[in-house]
Length: 237
Image 1 (cartoon, one colour):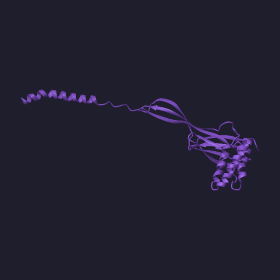
Image 2 (tube, rainbow, N blue to C red; image 1 turned 180 degrees about the vertical axis):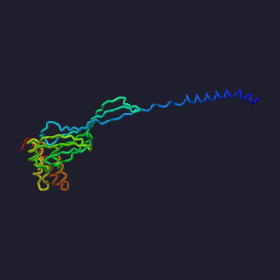
Image 3 (tube, rainbow, N blue to C red; image 1 turned 90 degrees about the horizontal axis):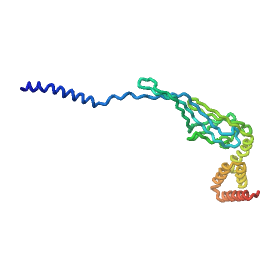
Image 4 (cartoon, helix red, strand yellow; image 1 turned 120 degrees about the vertical axis):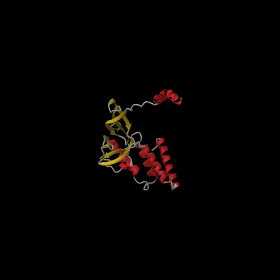
């Protein structure tokens, strides 16, 4: 009887196992197709320098901007490496925190761009003091990447600017310790008269710091400066 029962259950057991196997297979996730990949191929890489207008400098200061340009070919490929699509991607970004080289009279000077790719050129900065201002006719700006991508720009120096620089440099950089209060006030006023209010204010602040150890001399300088400014305001010589 056990044999008969076993024989009668055997087909059902086979069908039950087969059903469980099929059910288990049906719950498995189908294999996902391989993802496509994207390649970026650099087509061109350039820099550009915006040195502002006009090209001829008439003032010591000028904002210079450097921009980086990249052109990529963007290619989409399937899992087998076949090309599905192609397009161009153009990117323009500031040349941020990089060294811009200024060349004048055969000498090189380093200028640093900020996070916006800009640098403020000021020919009255101390690093330019030793230039032969009488002979300064032009300056060259050079931006260069590690990959030897180069951009250049030229600026001309006007006769008026050369004259202004020749007057301003000694007023700013000649020794202050050898002068007296009247000479200090005169230097501050002359810079202001040349339209160099920033440099005039810097010199005034420097003199106040210089006399910080001598309150009497500092008071004399500030009083003389205030008196002269009041006279200038009232149109008195």
